[in-house]
Length: 429
Image (cartoon, rainbow, N blue to C red; front, top):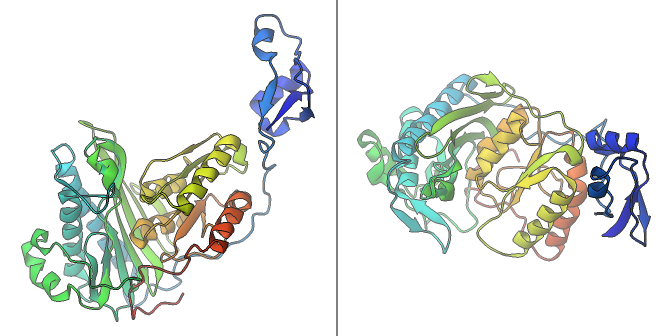
């Protein structure tokens, strides 16, 4: 941080207010009063020394953004894409109905860790989604946040379900939550699959026998919830998220975002299919066309563990707060990515996300014209441990800061191997 004066006339000063791209900073070792030739008292308000970060002007626009590999599957396999997308939408909306029924009622909250919540609503939403998938694709593999791996690991299709993203919002009535459903090929967890159980007692009666038969069986995964913490607090940033993968790559996705707040809850539904575009409530959406970081609004997230990755992202949060219009932390990965797709924010990044956090959102961003990579800039898959999504125009510029920080974490020993990928699940990764 150094002291600066603006070498400028009144005309130039007015132009920099409307276009920060033209700011010219001249370093100085001695604080100086900047005169703009404007009447007192406005002159008095403006004539203090400007102390600005030397990093403030980051980019002048990116005319030819670097191409990054696509993450969507080129094939949907034997199941028609329309059939997959229809079931993904039904599953996400079915889970959202469970959440909507509970959103203004008292919550029964338990903890997976000191601050990592799970509610009865998570489990009921996931069970409802599982019922829809079982009825339509009983031979597919499912990975759910609450239920773990279910189904046939020899299947090429993997459903990733986040029934409530994030849970913390319900108790405080914050409206940033949703249900995200994504389908893909089978996954295997780094720690094995014998530690997870499915709350079959909450499944629709017609599907209990199917669920009981596949719990613990190799081959099927489903990931359901996104935003449990926000839901538990009633904070308006949570969602139901469902995504489907074919041989490890996204083919169809839906996120039902809860908007509004206590006593005025509503939803909007995002959807996408590989090669078919991205939609919100049936209307096609596209990422923003902002190409300057200085004019961007950004979003990030922080996990429950306050480890080296968490500390690194605190540093990135500060850096980008200094050089952008702001960095938000909303607490629901699926919602954050849908907001990039909608064009209301330019980028989102986070370490240590799980497949059910990302499977739906990344496809929606890419189909809206955005770019998806790991935070080190390498090609992304849903079993990776970090993600950066953006409108594409600023992706390379964002990586100028994010990639070196991530490389340092890797050099310091951060594990970047694939995780939560089901054993014996065949992929094209």
